Image 1 (cartoon, rainbow, N blue to C red):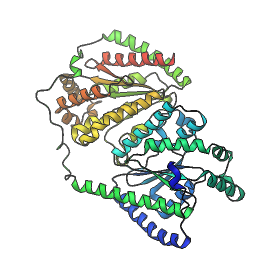
Image 2: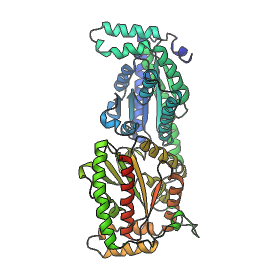
Image 3: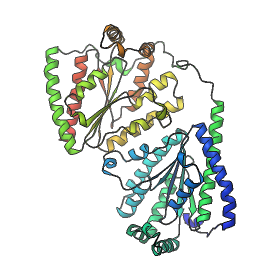
Length: 501
């Protein structure tokens, strides 16, 4: 049996514990401050295992040994109403620590699948799907340099019963044992069977499981602490060697993708940018569509249907105007428009998807992204801010992110507004001459225009690799603003109507 190695009766005497603790504590603090100074990666430490095996006690000891200012301990309970309104992994992304810091997690992402497997009869296929979700989450973080450690704290059935009885008999500790603990003990064998599947399926070099015997607290504390010290030291050495091998920082734009010559055909070449609509027709249809959207928005709120709208496209392609007309008739309390530019210092300290996960809407609400997670495969790729390995794997990470959004029941619509190069120049000049719009035109816009063909090709790749059946792109012919706005309004109206029907 997998857990026999954690039923050997290992223990550490008081004197030996004090000696080893003194050395280990100094080592952990030194490594913690070293990671904090480097600020290259966060550390995720998950604690799972048998009830009564000392998970909470060991987490408390780690907080005692290390500097708690740079540790965050999170104990998860059943999802709240706010959490249930979002994709399952929303709260795990929300609680990620920034680079240089550590997160200690109890009853985390493995807890719900384990409980559902034992008590709700989660099928083999459903159980495996849950584990695949976790693997993808861990892979995305590990690829970004995150150190992930997972501890299974183990007790035999006999030792678990004895531990629960001892806690129950202690007036100062009895509060820690409830009906659920005894109920779980009755299903001990079912939990162990499910745990074996979890560990076997998700034990990977980038996120390994460590099985720790939990009977003796001295042994348990030292074993966990020494593993963390060894793995953190190894990861620091690896990251420091990568840092030393990196080339010196280059001026902004020095690594920009070069314009291809000649430019190959793209999906945008098939768009009829001459498409127009008469002003009178536009005014009439706009009012009609907006009125319907207002009604559908109220029905979506009642049903708890959330909507995510993504807008991408060249500078001056009309994203802002289309967004304003789309949210015009919605209750302002039910939507948020987020415009994303270069990440802040706090955002750079996390995985690039972290800032977008945090902004997903609650039930019945609408979130609009003016620029989005596609920055990783557009501007970051073009400017050389993302390595080839980073932007190549981003396509899969983005598709998985969007799949989770849609699977939760969220209506996800992605709009690419495209214009001709001549139309962009005209709009740039109009902005420069307008007392109300000149502020919208920046040097960065002109710099990006110089790479028109490059961004066009990168946009083609975006459509090619991320226009999935789950989350297809809607291409909008944008040279005529009225035509583009109507097409966006009509698309949102049609899809929302289908979802609230």
